[in-house]
Length: 46
Image 1: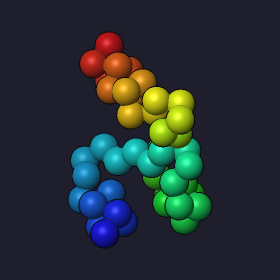
Image 2: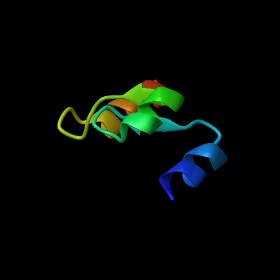
Image 3: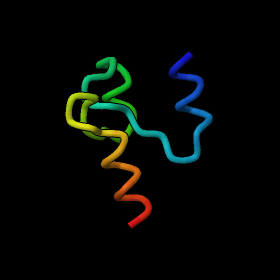
Image 4: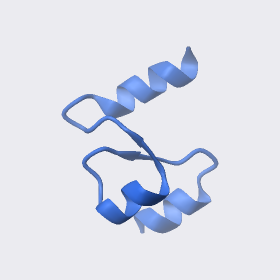
């Protein structure tokens, strides 16, 4: 289900500790331990 969601998303990102097959296909952000989602939101909102 992650693949379908990422393909549908207009701006897909994968966390650094995500599945290797997804890491090869989509932009990679920090891992969950690094606060990757929060950091990406801050980058996008400037």
